[in-house]
Length: 162
Image 1 (cartoon, rainbow, N blue to C red):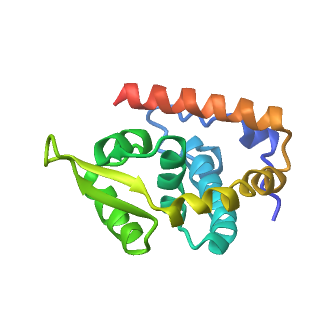
Image 2 (cartoon, rainbow, N blue to C red; image 1 turned 30 degrees about the horizontal axis):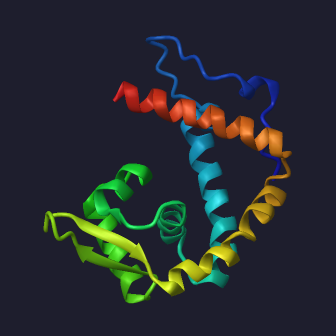
């Protein structure tokens, strides 16, 4: 199925007030982002199967590989997730012996997340993923970098809009 937009659908939809016409799906930025996210998740799911990780777990691991020993709240801020969403995920990862959850001595309300040796060992295997993802996109490194910058700016604008 060819999903390349035609010139008629490439521009954002402008619906005149009072016409009663519904917006067209293929003209919606939200749908382009949503369907692209689904396609990207499908590629990651296949690649992460060999690591025994889900995509959400992979994101947690990426943050911990950058800087180990973080609070749940720090992880949540970095991943744009609240603790109610993150805590069950972290418990499953602890059960899989990828990380430990320890109450902070100074403030028992804080939980410190730390990689185990097993979790840290996955880092080398995970390093093989980016080239596969780049190949799947059929984009150049420069195109991917530009796209990411545009998406970061879009996210910031949307978050500021509330």
